[in-house]
Length: 168
Image (cartoon, rainbow, N blue to C red; front, top):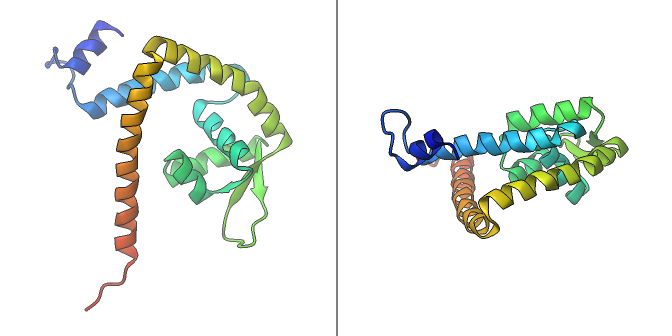
């Protein structure tokens, strides 16, 4: 970690950057995303696309709502990513009894691309875990998953409140 980042995240350099948790997580997220994207580049995928393909491979097929929930991604970003993946022929629409539901699945090409990307992803994963330490990551993942769960639950409750009719 560079001295500037270390100072920013510990609050020692209050004139430059805030030791804000959100800012620190965003900086780390960008750095880790760039590392994965760099390692995945030979596959033609970015880490966000890899995550979508891996989720579809695991589930067989999934609709937008299922992918949103599974990946904790907003609908606009997901729709844009799905459009690019569909354009590139790695995913396709899956027939669904309810025509309004947009279900997606991997194509043969998508499975081939994912098979090329998996070992590259594993290289990036190994590098991050070596640098961070698996124990530290296990603890951080548990804590961050709790924060994510609280946020997802809060959003669900907010959506449910908005759907309920107001009684006079």
